[in-house]
Amino acid sequence: MKKYTAPVIMLAVFEALAVILWLTKDNIFYLFNFSYIGCSIALGIFLYIREHRHARRVVQLLVGLYMLIYLGLINRENMQIEGFWYYLFSGVFEAATIHYAAAKIFGPVLFGRGWCGYACWTAMVLDFLPYKVPAQPRKRLEWIRYITFSLSFVFVAALFFAHVGNLEEIMFRAFIIGNVLYYAVGIVLAFAFKDNRAFCKYLCPVTVFLKPASYFALLRVKCDKEKCVSCGKCRKVCPMDVDVTDNSRKRENGTECILCMECVKNCPKGAL
Ligand code: SF4
Ligand code: SF4
Ligand code: SF4
Image 1 (tube, rainbow, N blue to C red):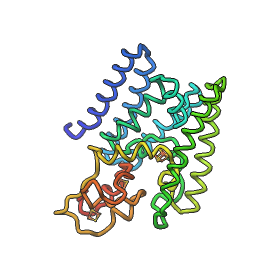
Image 2 (tube, rainbow, N blue to C red):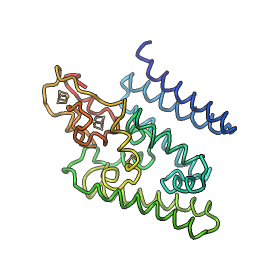
Image 3 (cartoon, rainbow, N blue to C red):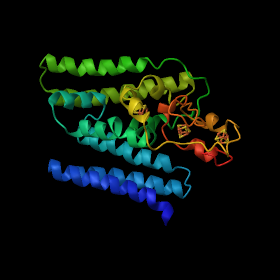
Image 4 (cartoon, protein in one colour):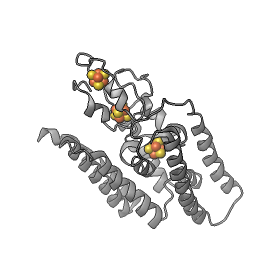
């Protein structure tokens, strides 16, 4: 039973968050929302422990589809980065601001870029494409993410300063158009660079939030140097080009790790 401690702890953490937000915000939606996400993640960890091949993909689909379809399209909450700026400018700690605080700004200190491996609805689709492991060397195009990040900020700031009316409707449309664009550009980049995660590496504005906090992540893959035979298999199967054999915080592409565990699963010596 001891091996199931991790999913139980994860479920407990999300339940605690669900109850705290339900009571402090006096809104039962938070109880449902965080309980659902916690159950999905706990199920994924349980499946991983049982060595289920698709454990990560199960969580990704459960959480990603819920956020995209239920929260985004049915509840009309813009959970993209524009939605975060929108709520921030409005001075409201709701929906996208809570989501960003938990999953993308403070959460990564605990679980790194787990969001990118297990919940993001953009990557949920990109991960179906054929280039699960990059077939080309990494490009030096990371700077583009700062442009997309700035554009998202300027877009929402301009709407506020221009006192544009009906912002809720604009945000909903921005969510739909933004997602269509993300998917289209993400798919084109994946085929152009032969890398499913090219969009994540070069364009995604959210990484500007994710990367600094994940540098300090408590949950990270570490290498047992005594067992490692430097075969390089872990690097070959890594979708994010992380040098996971280096245990230092400054490991190459360390803040890119999405905790997909492909390196762990493929290490012939059980060193990770
Ligand atoms: S980098 Fe961006 S698109 Fe990729 S998984 Fe993370 S949040 Fe999603
Ligand atoms: S796959 Fe395992 S043994 Fe091979 S280099 Fe990586 S950590 Fe070392
Ligand atoms: S293969 Fe390992 S190092 Fe690479 S992203 Fe997945 S968990 Fe991180």
